[in-house]
Length: 436
Image (cartoon, rainbow, N blue to C red; front, side, top):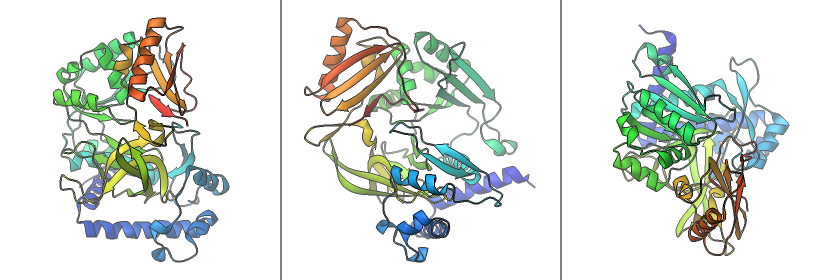
């Protein structure tokens, strides 16, 4: 009755949904089978993993007793062994890399199965939450290349892939930009007003920049059904602004290496239901104290990582983990997610502090096209303002006073003007990064 492609996709989405919404015991049994298969594969194909797991049967291996996989460990395995999936299996293998936002990009391998899963898991979230597929989807993406008219727009008839032959979906719109100065923001807003926005996929920095020039109520008028933030954690004030507009915010917790890790709870902000069809999550070493909250390192085991195994991989993120969500979801749930350790301030006494600065707050003190803050020493923060050849004395003084109030009086603040910020190899552009 159905063509092969939509039938396969619908079947995969149903399977993901059943796994993640089934009873805890059934879900955990399924996960243990997947983990055993992954460990056996790693033992058979890799000397690197045999040295970490041992030559015993995978069924006898205790996950919590295995060593933590660091980025340097990952580089060693990839450099010495390459992909652990051999040719002839009918699967394509490709090279991927992290964005480099936390340092040197990390190279790894993925198979076509990983890419198919990521697409299906993304769609499964819409099914699990009962989202309306007839809404449009609008994605805003920053790119490095210069764009002649400031922004470029591409439209497609649907956004649900092979399911489009079975289910009617809205229009898919891709908007790309390089920088977002006043003129580009005006063009972007005009484009967003042309069609119903529907599901808006954009980074917090992009939305914050728009809010500096325009009242975000235009998003409500443009029929924005939901904002799905990408790249970084949205500031609480920005979330409040969307709540005031009655536009729900549903962040995903994911990484380039393993894909989907968790999806935001619709009832309790700041809680993420773990994508149990994709990963096992542990939180260890809870010795980090961020503003009085004890958090630990997030480790993930990617159940489908056969080309490059990610087993107890240290993401570099800090968070807490509970067995179930306050909303009643009976599955592991991440909360107090602070993101990268590089996104918090480090102090001389060993303390850590969250450091969330909104572009709108900085723009009230100086004009710029983009900005970047870096903690370069335990007592120094450097802030760069792009699109400026120089800053006047009052702007510099205002910025220094503001950042000292937020970071602490012990910090020296260096303010730099530059025509264009050198972001290096990173595709991400974090507003703040601790380099200490």
